[in-house]
Length: 368
Ligand code: IPM
Ligand code: MG
Image (cartoon, rainbow, N blue to C red; front, side):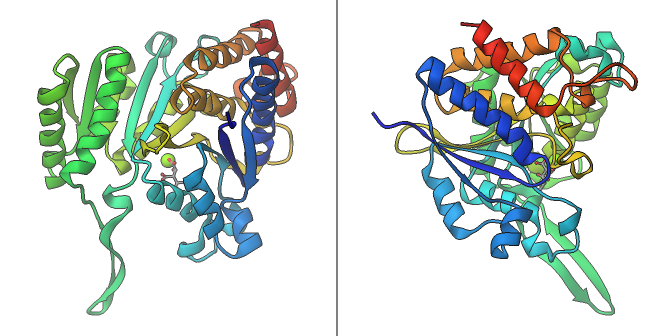
């Protein structure tokens, strides 16, 4: 049997540093668990622009379509701020999402016990928090046409279009219902049906999918603004949330910050099944390229490592091994290993990126 293939796009800023720690984890699985992967590396974002004049080369795009899973670090940085919109680092990421048709973006917001004090909210509001935001990722205002900056009389007008088809809503709703069924059995759908037709359609279609195939899941609807308020008031009322591309972008940042540990949160972007039955998939940490700490050994590799855990679970059907890796990260935190983002000022000596990665490997060893 041939090994599953992974394409690593470490990207910019702290991407390569955190990805180096993921490589250790991947190698560990090959050596110790008989789970060997064929790993290839390529460029995305600003580094791809530097090399090829485009944030994603066509050859890289083609390879991403063929491999079993893509692991991405982060894209962007101040050096690229003045680039033309069409070649900005973010365009590379958006092209991957769009052309791989990764419509379901899974963003867990989980509060690790050892880190509950880091939340800006009271400990009892966040401790034990474990919610999943499913963000639609390939449509909506991010991609709707018409778009552009046009001349209208004497002034310019900026146009973007919020647009959803029934099938786009139905497929992401199905992904969310499936997850809810395996988790706490509750799904809350968020839109702005009070002001947007796309929101009215969103609510209708989610309700139809529910009535047809998922009536065992408890469904509720909320306006997205009220949802943001409820997320900060009492986030534990939620299990799975499904929402559109733009609201999902906002709400997932909000939910991530609730946990007090942006450096800890992974994500999975999934599409339709390929010929081998695995979904098209891209895994990436929720955090960005963090140019302010790049190259200093300060980056927390846990979000990227936990993104690989999601790959084990969703692409490779290795839920037990994903549990093992998540357990290893939790143990390391419980043991008090901390990168600077997980410490209060003046709290002792932080672990470096490499030390954090090594501690995870040690915890994996201890799990055998
Ligand atoms: C995210 C990011 C991206 C988005 C950017 C980098 C294009 O904010 O993944 O949440 O807006 O989707
Ligand atoms: Mg975002």
